[in-house]
Every structure is written in structure tokens, then in C-alpha cells.
Image (tube, rainbow, N blue to C red; front, side, top):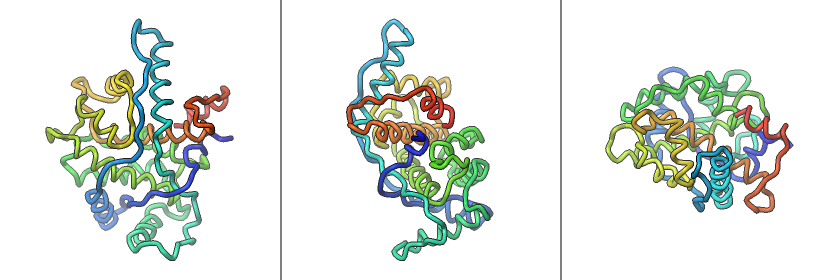
Length: 266
């Protein structure tokens, strides 16, 4: 079984908008992200491990423990299976219909969004939000975001995949602003656990510290693009884990090829 496909298995779908080619598209999608509401779902126990002695096994033990225990209770809404763009549901809202038309303009003839197109969309939108401190979304970040959402490994996002991703970005943007209590435009190390928990991810202190050291600046502040890209990755990791943990034991077993596929294409 392809582990990449496991990212997207399950029922239910995300709503939400996109981003833009040209001023009109950017305006519509900028409005969608600025109107975003509330927090995430899920929840879960923190987890053990980590620490003492600094050995690799203890570090890995802490990370695995945190992920497995939290994954047992994290219940994201997976995106619906991709459908052809012409199969527009009769009960779709006008907002979704409008977004579908805009997506067609953005995606072009292949009706899929590449990493470069995603980068352009995100960077056009964030320029309309000066309260979000960011250096911009880089191509490697966007390639990673596409990869973890790409159910058929085409290297691009279809309509449902992109809509799901954008719905999450809207929610997480609202959480980012909510927990930026000092209005610095960034999330500091003391604000990060609350922000991640509001998004549905309960991790242990050791794992939070690892994330802060890897993705925050020297002062422990995380900007908007790093915040979003970390949540995209966490969402995909938890989704894959739960898909493979069919008995709900909090443990999975993979072979080397599956492990490489999971870690390299992400």
C-alpha cells in the first residue's frame, strides 16, 4: 500500500478558498483567508519519552511516544476523494462554485496546482496581511506541502486536495493571530504549545522544544510560513499514522521501502 495515499484516506471534506492569479483572484482569496474562523479539532494525550543522557534512542523514543499517544485521539477531517472538475455537486454553495471557477483559472488545462503555483498564491495572499510576519513561502516548503497532500504522487494538487489544504490554512491563520498575544506577528516559544493544541496537536515538551529549535529563530519566535508548514506536516504525519494503525494500538510496523517512501516524499 502506498503510504502517500494513506495521508488522504477516510471520509469527509474540507471547505474553503484558494489564492490568486491577478488582482481579482488575489482579492477574493485574500478575503477568504482574512474571514477565517476558529480552531482545530482533535486532541490527545501528551506522551512520554524524550530526554536524559541525550542519546539518540531516548530522543527517538520521546518523539515516537508523543506521536503515537497523540495520534490515538487526533481525528482530523480527511479531504474527500478527488473528482473530475466537471462533477459539480448540485448542493454546492455559491462560494464553492465560485472557488471552483477560480481554481480552474489558477490550475490551467491540467486542473492541478503545482508547488510553484501554490507558492505564488500563498505569497500574494500574505502580502495583504502585514500583521503576519513572514519571509514568504519558499519553493521547498511548498513542494513539501504539495507532497504530503498529493494522494496520487503526480506532484500537484487537484481541486479537493487544494480546497482541503486551504481550509486548514484559513483555520490555522486564525489560530496564529489568536495566540500571537503580544501582536509581534510571530508565535513565541511560550505561545506555541497553546497554538498547536488549538489546532488539535497535543505534543510533549521535548517535541515542542525540538520543533522550536528547528523552525524558530534564535529568539524562539516562529513566523507564519513556518507555523503553517509545520501544521501541514503534522496533519499529514498523524493522518498517515492513524491510517496504518488499523487496530488503534498506537503502534505501527513498516518496512524499509515504506519508511523511505513516507519520509522522502514529504
